[in-house]
Length: 253
Ligand SMILES: [Zn+2]
Picture (cartoon, rainbow, N blue to C red):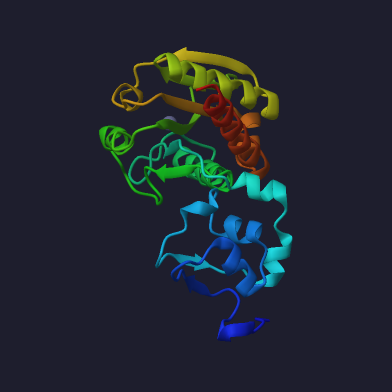
């Protein structure tokens, strides 16, 4: 139910900032705590309010749910993360036991995106749907931005079906740091075989200017590992590991 507050405004509405208004005065007007108002609008500095700016007003029920720790979580981060779900469209990637790599990559990528956004990161996906995208197009998207890292998400396969585990490829020194951070978290969270981090000249890594890594989250050619990779539990842990690695990198640089 939507509560009708004073001044004829309905909660959950948008407020246009008038002259001399502050976050404090707006919060008083709608009876919403300043901290909730800031968190709801993803604002870390209350002094950035501008005349004519549109402020979204949380309903009172959602306002009380915001705790100080949640406010901290949505503090905007300066770094942008380019998430690249490998393959797509006519390129299915590896195909084993009815599992298409392109689909697994997208599922993990979307989870990574959601967690990163909740942590305040800016995220760009190279693809959002099941379309084909060339490797140079993927790199070109990353090269539009400054202060970014590029994370390409894949699952592995080989004719040697006993092979399993996770590995992360990189280019450059910063790329190696990011790869190591992600790889460590993958092993810790997924308890899979550690195939290590490796330097690579994959086109998608070579053509990106920013620190770039390619994560191979598991072998779908190994029946045991494939059965794990298919589960949303494994995909969730993989996404969490990738995000933890990115955060570790972000704190270091
Ligand atoms: Zn792949």
